[in-house]
Each structure stands twice: as structure tokens, then as C-alpha cells.
Length: 415
Image (cartoon, rainbow, N blue to C red; front, side, top):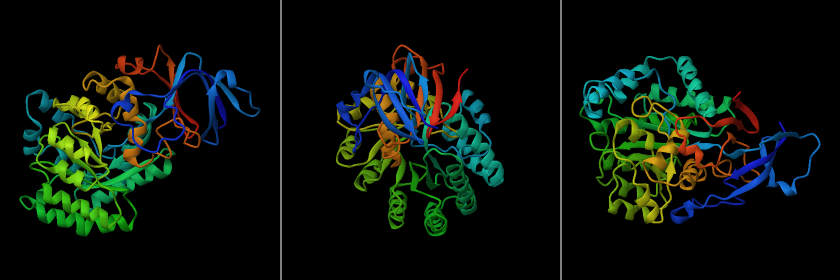
């Protein structure tokens, strides 16, 4: 579908050539073009400009965007979108006062999800996951990372990744897959974490690599889950197979995991709800990207990643949803951006940069999405007529997206 959007009130995230992440004070700058047009040809952004330079083109559909804002779709660099069933009973337990640790101790948490997933057929798992993917696309997500980690056996982990790869083939948006595996300790390995890491590295990982099921590797580096030594082993195993690491770290404690990740220059460290001055200094000495997951903080009522400290230290920041059944049962990136503004005190400009261009770097898809750039995919959000882009995070309870395009193809149209 070839078309030209005209009379765009404001075209956001216009970048000719962005070769590195946006960090520190630069995050405050969101390059835009007012009263603009945007040309899409064969699913690619081919040109754009101010309306006083617009010339009509034969064979192109003209779409009037008067009063509307156009921006690149959200890039969600941290999700667990492929999972089975739900954990709404644990939601009720939390309301009654049980902690995350107490729920896990009574058989809930990740182990609960793993048992459900192991009992779910690959066909059923695909259908459940397909619905979730369609939902997040409708909410403006145009590139997404999907982790395993709710399988905890070779067969179940591979089932999750096969489903993610099938979604990758059947949907046009960029999808990257991550082998997590070391997400929790299975009951069969109770008290023997080292043996399970052996299983993950020596048994699961070679099979996953053989079927080309993963782009990245991950581990939940946290007290009572996986320790520093386990994390180093997983990072090293990823290097052996040329799989960059994206590590869950500093969600509940700071105990050296972030330092280890920074020293290894892993692609990203995700969560960071607990962040010390020492941690920040380690990040500054590395190329590792800090990824915040504010909807997880909202749901679990734990601290939010200290975005202002990161920005004041001239660091970049990425926003992602952490979509999963236990701690963030939502993949709504609009809400993530709102929370970043409301709870993390990020400006709309900073939050939009973090959820688009920086997030694209955290998925290694910066050459495809994340900005309005000639040659990138026409993965676009068109809003309703709104006052300004600040209205998007401000009006957090409403959906102001009128249309979503993936590779120039309309995905939704709000009547």
C-alpha cells in the first residue's frame, strides 16, 4: 500500500541518521516537524517534509491527518508475551496481603506458570500468544522482544521459542527472541542451582542454537534465584554462540549483578528498581543499556527505576513493558510511557525517546524502527486529533490511537 499522510499536525521522532542511543540531556530533545507530510512506499518510509514542500503524486493514496500527530510505533524490548493461562488467583492473594516471595513459596509465581505451560500444547500456546500480540499491536507496539523462561525444561523452553518464531514469521513487525531458561529453579532441582545451570547451558542451549530459536540470552540475576557465578556462566555461554545477553538484575536487591553485567558489556540490564551510586558508576563505564519496567513497579508496588539519576549521570534509558502473567499482565506501552512521566518524573520527550529510538537499540533493530527515517519500516502510530504529544502520557486512561500501520499496512482503525 503506497500512501502519503498530509496535514500532519506534528511528525515526531524525525531523525536523518541516529547511530547511537540518546542519553543524558539529549533525551530532552525530541526532533519534530510541524504541519508535515509523510510518504510511504512498499512498506517503507520514503520521504517526508513540511506541507509547503508537498507535491501530489499519482498512484499514491492521500490520507488527511489534520489535527493528528504521527510517530513511530513503540518498541517493546522486554516481554514474556508467550505464556499459558493466567495467574489471576495470585492477584487476589496479593490483595489479601501476600508478598511476591510468599506467593512463590506456596507454589505460585514462575513455577506456577511453568507447570501450566508444560501442560499446554504448542498449538494452544500459539493461539493464546497470537491474541496477545494482536492486542499490543493495536495499542501501538511495532517491534517486540519475546523471552522464554516459563518452560524450565528443554522441551517446554523450545516450545515457547518455536511459538515466538512462528509469530515472527506470520506477523510483519520485527520480533526478537530471547532464551531465558534460568528464570527460576525447577522443583526437580530443588537446592541444586548449579546442576540446573549445567542443564540450561549444556542441554538446552545447544538444541536452541541448532534450531536457531534465539537472538539473545537472559538470566534472572537476583537473590534466591540465580547468583553472580550463575550469571557469569550464562553470559559466557551466550558469547560462545554469539548470543548477546539481556539480564534481569537489581529488581529487589543490588548485590553485584549489575557490576558483572557492566564489566561484560551485556546489551541491556533490565529492571533496576534498586540502583546504588556504585551501580550507576559501573553503567557509566560500560556500553550496557539500562531498561526500566515501570508497569512492573506499579503492579508489584515496588520502587521505580530512578530515571532522573540515570539521566543526570548522562546515561541513556529504555522503557519496556515486561508483559508477563505474574508481575505485569499488560503490554500497553502507552501506559508505560505515562507511568514513566508520572512516577519516574521523565518528561514526555524523554519517555518517547526511551520507548522508541533507545528501545530499538536495546533490541538491535535500530536500522529498521524507532524513528521517522527514510528507509526504515513504515511502522506508524496516528493519533486522534489531540492538543499535543504531551496529551498522550497525560491522558493515561484513554486510548488516543486512531490507526496503527505495520510496514505500511493498517492494523486497526478506530471508528
